[in-house]
Image (tube, rainbow, N blue to C red):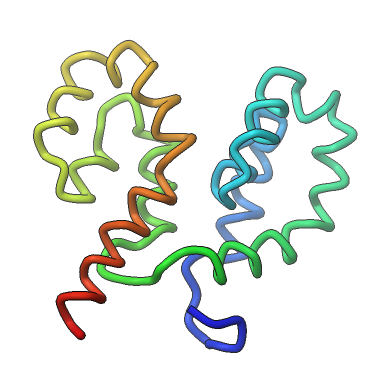
Length: 139
């Protein structure tokens, strides 16, 4: 996807909605910034100072994510909302067509939370990979 393409994979609205939980790094994970998301998780948004600064950085993080990830059949925004609020139940995995692991998450609490953490780190790449396959078969 090019920088001047009008399509979007991530939205500023969802970014700000997750920013409310930003002291836990939710918005940083959403925009593909796993390391800083993890740091925010363990430091409560860098002691809330980084969380406040991020209020102004979200538009730039949104642009970067739109360039980095592939738009397609799986909607990033819906998958992230499902992961954030229902992740331990595996609903986001079922939405992506990963029924076996989704049902496994459902009965194991997201594999006792470890699968949930894994998905925080990798969900954007998982979706982009699925969406990229759809682009190849369409072309």
